Image 1: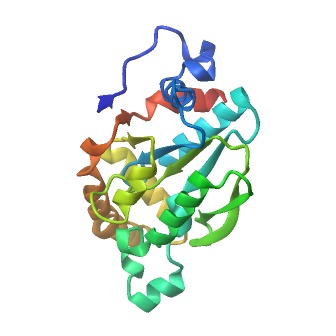
Image 2 (image 1 turned 90 degrees about the vertical axis):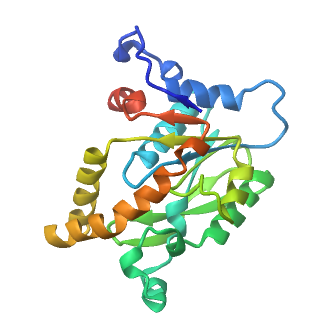
Image 3 (image 1 turned 45 degrees about the vertical axis):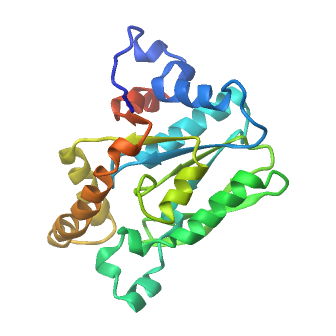
Length: 238
């Protein structure tokens, strides 16, 4: 496992996307020598609010600008959150975001499909934070898509079905952020979703933090660690 963090001598404003460490590594993975015919699947793991979806979008946008539209596509685990109705049925609403609150087998099945099916459009669900619910078909994988960027908390987990997910990934990166940054992001996320500050604080302390601790224990199973500053400057200039 390599920890990214070596600063570049080139000012960020002058760097092309391919020179940013994360994009350069993703491009190298896409164009690796001896790459078999088929799609490349890159996974991003990390605790809640570490910046996984931000990095995924940055990679996809940069690669599509360089390689052509729809070269890269997005497949977030958050699209497989159980609905609030199912969480209520299972008495799991207070644990939303824990491993048992995802349709992990459904996520694995779609990941297997996009890894193998190069002949059809594949529609991918996402999570809508305003609705606090998963929604169908927000994202699209086209037949000519060559790179799938998938992200979620538990991709490095050593239990099934996550180990089957890991077997489909050509690389798995760990997106890291300090606890205070993630804490502030989570509080802002929950209050924006309609919770008052006390309820948001309770959710962070009793649910998000235990989930994060579980994810952090899998850090060493990832191939590379990405710091937020590895793509923050490129994101601002994009």
